[in-house]
Image (spheres, rainbow, N blue to C red):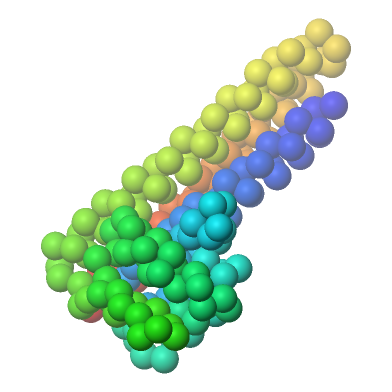
Length: 184
């Protein structure tokens, strides 16, 4: 039973770390990267659809991304969704066939803003991991009557080690993203 609680917490914490890494990828570092657009939802015939399902993304130059819609009628909707993206401040235009997204050169102030945004996302991920720990600890405390106190204490120690390793993984990913953002 304790192993099940720990296993469930491990899975959920790993998913949280993966989600944080994906979230960090959506913050621009001055280079056009298709990962920036993975969370863009386009209003396609009344339903929000991920951009990757509607168009091909190509990266011909460092700061340019070409978005080629599979359905040309969705061109305007795709352009509108990209323009509405927060924290992008890109030059977006279309020529009737493709949408060309040109990212501006990042200023030092803008880089620092992006670092703050990424730190906020990192802190959110760490809070989520701690919430998972708290829930798992509550589940372990509920087992005290069924299993020995020593086993519960060992489970709690393992849970703390697990939490620390996942928080460190978020910190490491955050450190890499900060270095990428501050790199000129």
